[in-house]
Image 1 (tube, helix red, strand yellow):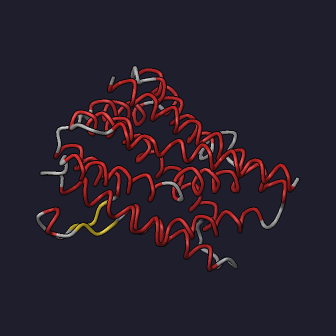
Image 2 (cartoon, rainbow, N blue to C red; image 1 turned 90 degrees about the vertical axis):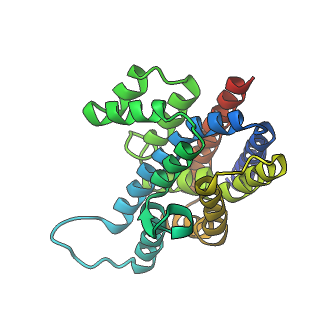
Length: 260
């Protein structure tokens, strides 16, 4: 089992390193617009994954009863606080505001005229019917459809198990984001493409800050809590993380092909 876990860790690391290459393909304003029109789906479905984990940890029920895992509840609630209702200062938004990172991302897209038609159409269809119908009825690129389906599998689907959801969250999102966004920010700065992009700059810098300094470590701690030193759960978690990394790599490849 130790050998298998070690091998899974190595495979996951290689996939994550390959993901970072997306920054090399963001050279023009059009590249940024395409990237955001695809990546916004990852920003949205991240919240479903996060709220799934919060629901499991806090065991939301009425009437309320005290739970013994206060530290884990505080960890997940602190992440949700930032992701669902973060502070956006007046220097960015005109007046001090609180909003989800998804809403901040949409404002970033609108500021640089990145098309929101795909995500708007999808969310409207998902509200009216369900996620599955929306994924297939909205004529989405296959890379987006597979990515969202993978996330949904680990949040509301048959593959929804606490340690697998936590693995998709920790390894598939929180621990890879800081380095990836730092690279994109560096590339955009180098190319001089960050003029009149105050929302996007704030979004990227905010995620580098909180994911790198707080959320990444907290997500790993949550995962370790759910695995509870069970080697089988650890191996399953890494396998889930690898599947999520492959889906994200395919999402990036869809963006790159769109830009060619």
